[in-house]
View 1 (tube, rainbow, N blue to C red):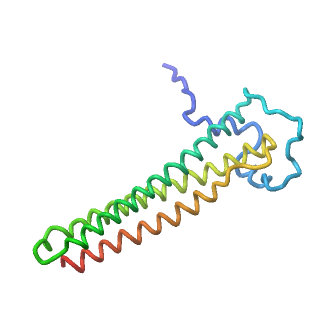
View 2: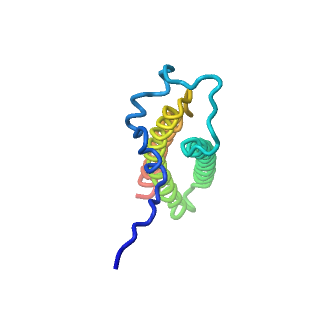
View 3: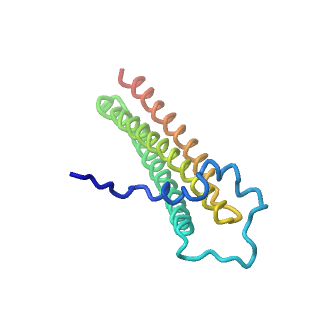
Length: 174
Protein backbone atom coordinates (compact mmCIF):
# COMPACT_ATOMS: atom_id res chain seq x y z
CA UNK A 1 0.00 0.00 0.00
CA UNK A 2 1.65 3.20 -1.09
CA UNK A 3 1.07 6.36 0.82
CA UNK A 4 0.61 9.48 -1.18
CA UNK A 5 2.05 12.64 0.31
CA UNK A 6 -0.66 15.24 0.56
CA UNK A 7 -0.18 18.91 -0.23
CA UNK A 8 1.42 21.07 2.37
CA UNK A 9 -1.05 22.98 4.52
CA UNK A 10 1.29 25.95 4.57
CA UNK A 11 1.45 27.71 1.21
CA UNK A 12 4.01 30.30 2.33
CA UNK A 13 7.18 28.19 2.72
CA UNK A 14 6.60 26.32 -0.57
CA UNK A 15 6.34 29.55 -2.55
CA UNK A 16 9.33 31.17 -0.84
CA UNK A 17 11.83 28.45 -1.62
CA UNK A 18 12.71 29.43 -5.22
CA UNK A 19 14.40 32.77 -4.43
CA UNK A 20 15.22 33.78 -0.88
CA UNK A 21 14.20 32.47 2.47
CA UNK A 22 12.73 35.07 4.87
CA UNK A 23 15.96 35.36 6.93
CA UNK A 24 17.97 36.06 3.75
CA UNK A 25 15.40 38.61 2.61
CA UNK A 26 15.65 40.46 5.90
CA UNK A 27 19.40 40.82 5.29
CA UNK A 28 18.64 42.44 1.92
CA UNK A 29 15.97 44.70 3.48
CA UNK A 30 13.51 47.04 1.84
CA UNK A 31 15.14 49.98 3.60
CA UNK A 32 18.03 49.79 1.15
CA UNK A 33 16.66 51.46 -2.01
CA UNK A 34 19.33 50.00 -4.34
CA UNK A 35 17.19 47.15 -5.60
CA UNK A 36 13.82 48.86 -5.99
CA UNK A 37 11.71 48.33 -9.07
CA UNK A 38 11.90 50.88 -11.85
CA UNK A 39 9.05 53.31 -12.50
CA UNK A 40 7.56 51.48 -15.50
CA UNK A 41 7.77 47.94 -14.11
CA UNK A 42 4.49 46.17 -13.40
CA UNK A 43 3.72 43.31 -11.11
CA UNK A 44 1.49 40.79 -12.83
CA UNK A 45 -1.73 39.79 -11.07
CA UNK A 46 -0.94 36.10 -11.57
CA UNK A 47 2.37 36.43 -9.67
CA UNK A 48 2.12 34.13 -6.65
CA UNK A 49 4.30 36.32 -4.45
CA UNK A 50 2.18 39.35 -5.28
CA UNK A 51 -1.01 37.50 -4.31
CA UNK A 52 0.59 36.38 -1.06
CA UNK A 53 1.71 39.95 -0.37
CA UNK A 54 -1.82 41.25 -0.86
CA UNK A 55 -3.20 38.53 1.45
CA UNK A 56 -0.61 39.30 4.14
CA UNK A 57 -1.26 43.05 3.93
CA UNK A 58 -5.00 42.39 4.31
CA UNK A 59 -4.24 40.12 7.27
CA UNK A 60 -2.10 42.90 8.78
CA UNK A 61 -4.99 45.34 8.43
CA UNK A 62 -7.35 42.81 9.99
CA UNK A 63 -4.94 42.28 12.91
CA UNK A 64 -4.75 46.02 13.59
CA UNK A 65 -8.53 46.33 13.50
CA UNK A 66 -9.09 43.29 15.71
CA UNK A 67 -6.43 44.19 18.26
CA UNK A 68 -7.78 47.73 18.55
CA UNK A 69 -11.39 46.55 19.01
CA UNK A 70 -10.45 43.88 21.54
CA UNK A 71 -8.39 46.40 23.53
CA UNK A 72 -11.23 48.91 23.62
CA UNK A 73 -13.70 46.20 24.64
CA UNK A 74 -11.40 44.90 27.38
CA UNK A 75 -10.65 48.28 28.94
CA UNK A 76 -14.34 49.24 28.81
CA UNK A 77 -15.46 45.98 30.44
CA UNK A 78 -12.81 46.11 33.16
CA UNK A 79 -13.45 49.79 33.84
CA UNK A 80 -17.19 49.27 34.18
CA UNK A 81 -16.69 46.17 36.34
CA UNK A 82 -14.31 47.93 38.71
CA UNK A 83 -16.57 50.99 38.88
CA UNK A 84 -19.51 48.79 39.83
CA UNK A 85 -17.43 46.85 42.34
CA UNK A 86 -16.03 49.88 44.11
CA UNK A 87 -19.37 51.69 44.05
CA UNK A 88 -21.30 48.80 45.61
CA UNK A 89 -18.72 47.38 47.95
CA UNK A 90 -19.92 47.71 51.51
CA UNK A 91 -20.25 45.55 54.59
CA UNK A 92 -23.60 44.12 53.41
CA UNK A 93 -22.39 42.47 50.23
CA UNK A 94 -18.71 42.11 51.03
CA UNK A 95 -19.01 38.32 50.73
CA UNK A 96 -19.70 37.68 47.04
CA UNK A 97 -18.79 40.87 45.16
CA UNK A 98 -14.97 40.51 45.44
CA UNK A 99 -15.23 37.32 43.36
CA UNK A 100 -15.63 39.65 40.40
CA UNK A 101 -11.95 40.43 40.91
CA UNK A 102 -11.08 36.75 40.34
CA UNK A 103 -12.99 36.84 37.08
CA UNK A 104 -11.13 39.99 36.03
CA UNK A 105 -7.83 38.32 36.96
CA UNK A 106 -8.63 35.29 34.78
CA UNK A 107 -9.87 37.49 31.92
CA UNK A 108 -6.79 39.71 32.04
CA UNK A 109 -4.31 36.84 32.12
CA UNK A 110 -6.15 35.00 29.33
CA UNK A 111 -6.17 38.09 27.13
CA UNK A 112 -2.47 38.70 27.87
CA UNK A 113 -1.65 35.14 26.78
CA UNK A 114 -3.59 35.65 23.55
CA UNK A 115 -1.69 38.88 22.89
CA UNK A 116 1.63 37.10 23.51
CA UNK A 117 0.67 34.46 20.93
CA UNK A 118 -0.20 37.19 18.42
CA UNK A 119 3.33 38.56 18.84
CA UNK A 120 4.88 35.36 17.49
CA UNK A 121 2.51 35.27 14.51
CA UNK A 122 3.11 38.91 13.61
CA UNK A 123 6.86 38.39 13.98
CA UNK A 124 6.66 35.62 11.35
CA UNK A 125 4.51 37.85 9.16
CA UNK A 126 7.19 40.54 9.28
CA UNK A 127 9.76 38.16 7.80
CA UNK A 128 7.37 37.01 5.08
CA UNK A 129 6.39 40.57 4.12
CA UNK A 130 10.04 41.61 4.03
CA UNK A 131 10.89 38.60 1.85
CA UNK A 132 8.13 39.34 -0.64
CA UNK A 133 8.92 43.05 -0.76
CA UNK A 134 12.59 42.30 -1.48
CA UNK A 135 11.77 39.59 -4.03
CA UNK A 136 9.33 41.83 -5.91
CA UNK A 137 11.61 44.85 -5.43
CA UNK A 138 8.89 46.85 -3.68
CA UNK A 139 9.96 50.03 -1.90
CA UNK A 140 8.63 48.92 1.46
CA UNK A 141 6.21 46.87 3.49
CA UNK A 142 3.64 47.55 6.21
CA UNK A 143 5.20 48.58 9.51
CA UNK A 144 4.34 45.54 11.59
CA UNK A 145 6.63 46.84 14.33
CA UNK A 146 3.68 48.95 15.49
CA UNK A 147 1.55 45.86 16.17
CA UNK A 148 4.47 44.14 17.90
CA UNK A 149 5.02 47.12 20.19
CA UNK A 150 1.31 47.55 20.87
CA UNK A 151 0.83 43.84 21.70
CA UNK A 152 3.83 43.82 24.04
CA UNK A 153 2.66 46.95 25.82
CA UNK A 154 -0.97 45.79 26.06
CA UNK A 155 0.00 42.27 27.14
CA UNK A 156 2.17 43.65 29.93
CA UNK A 157 -0.59 46.03 30.98
CA UNK A 158 -3.12 43.20 31.03
CA UNK A 159 -0.88 41.09 33.30
CA UNK A 160 -0.41 44.09 35.58
CA UNK A 161 -4.18 44.72 35.77
CA UNK A 162 -4.85 41.03 36.36
CA UNK A 163 -2.41 40.70 39.23
CA UNK A 164 -3.65 43.98 40.71
CA UNK A 165 -7.18 42.55 40.74
CA UNK A 166 -5.85 39.39 42.41
CA UNK A 167 -4.06 41.49 45.06
CA UNK A 168 -7.21 43.54 45.68
CA UNK A 169 -9.22 40.32 46.03
CA UNK A 170 -6.70 38.99 48.57
CA UNK A 171 -6.87 42.28 50.49
CA UNK A 172 -10.70 42.38 50.55
CA UNK A 173 -11.58 38.75 50.99
CA UNK A 174 -8.76 37.10 52.88
